[in-house]
Image 1 (cartoon, rainbow, N blue to C red):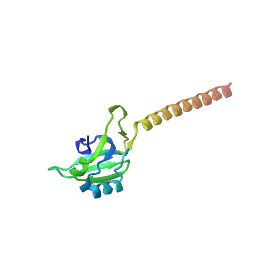
Image 2: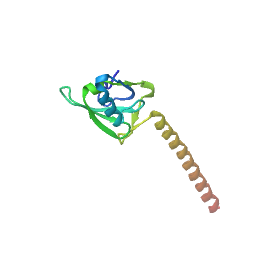
Image 3: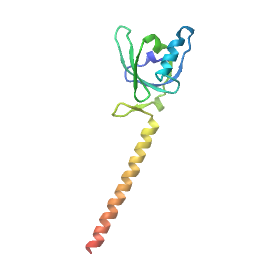
Image 4: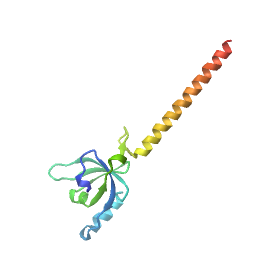
Length: 127
């Protein structure tokens, strides 16, 4: 599967950029823009009439590439370990999102413990 096959909004990981002899300059240019193996990419938009693709590489870099360039970018997608993006439209690996959720739970438990401790101290002081 290549980058040109993704739909708008879909996210994948770059597996490899094909090193076709006539496209050597293109491969180097894409690498300079961050399109390298194991980097997340997201299709943000596609121009009509086989026009350029607007993609995000990593968390912040946005570039436009021609459709034939997107075809040499081989991607891998895994539904179970798919990348997600936060409300700020930055791509964050699912494992980090899970870690953030666990930290939130621990912080909520700590806050609850502190509130219970303060209430119990207030009750002791009133007697």
